[in-house]
Image (cartoon, rainbow, N blue to C red; front, side, top):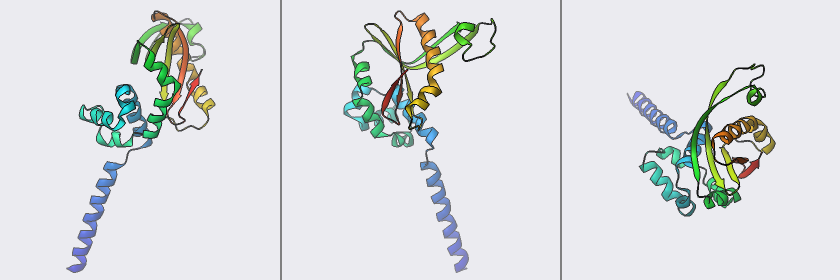
Length: 193
């Protein structure tokens, strides 16, 4: 009797603990997705002055869950708000986030990405994390949450994609793509390609 009762209570405690633990765990990939969602959906001028208030708004409006909001790396976001890149973006009158585009590219543009492509045209679609205009052209920004300490590794990992995006966007934007920047939220720095 007493042994079975104790065992039943212990089993119930373990089930409750497991349920709570599973609900509160957010994987590294999920944290990265949440941070990326924050970067694309937040009102950064408001968040710069009241980060918690902006996170609450994003939860209230369904952009983030409560767990996702809790997982946001506040230090990384606040570091971004101190960066020169953020100041440049803030001064721009033309900022596009999650800018979707597509275009057809041929051998000369794609052979470094797709060897032996031949003479085929390929329709390529992309989504630029952020594109902002300055007087002499547009700046393409890609936010990365990879936990990589060496900036050269990030540059090597994403340079071809960024160059391809810049080439495609250069064909459709009214001004040239003058600069391509990877902003590493983990490192708190920009990597100019």
